[in-house]
Length: 262
Image 1 (cartoon, rainbow, N blue to C red):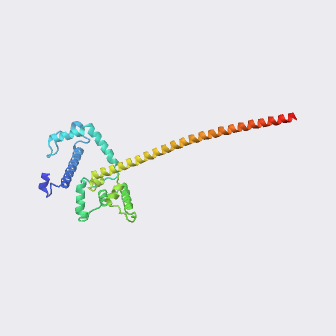
Image 2: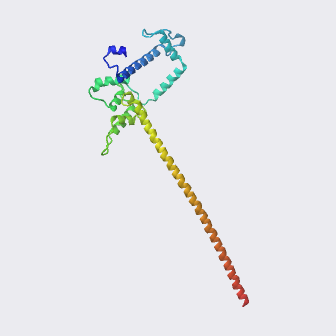
């Protein structure tokens, strides 16, 4: 920070300034390592890889540490995984080698000037290639955002902000965090709220299931009582029918005896 402060007028006590400078320096280091690896390591036989630094600004020990890291099997596996993950990214940023902080600063200086860009504006600016324009997934996302922003607003309701719309469409990306419109903590708090709501719904569902189980048990008990009562009625009817049959037999025998006596 001290060396950078000599070159530019800045408030070194500001957290935002320090974060921006750290982001710029980290991005520069990543780009430098990428170019060095591509020029002096990738595709070169192990016994022909340089053992001395190709840069005056880097000592030999630092270079050998880089070579050791690139040669490590775990690092190679990590690079392969990162490459596969990058291929899965739907919304490839088109800001070149510049980090988001530097790109947004340039946009505000050159394009927006005194006007504050919205999250929707920044999404389009960060995903538009000067040569090929927007890729298909980005075009679809933009169309979805425009459709949401064009939805009629019910009376008494506030229209969704551009940040809310972008967040709704880009639910699984860190774009809003990268451009400084959403903090990681707010993302976590939002996730915590969702988790709490899920737990609440699961609890309500469990209570409902228990209520259904109790009701089913009650119905089963009533059904058992009904079956018992039905059985008793059937037994009573059978006994009554038997009594009627015996009565008819006695009556018939009596009539036959009476006829015989005559």
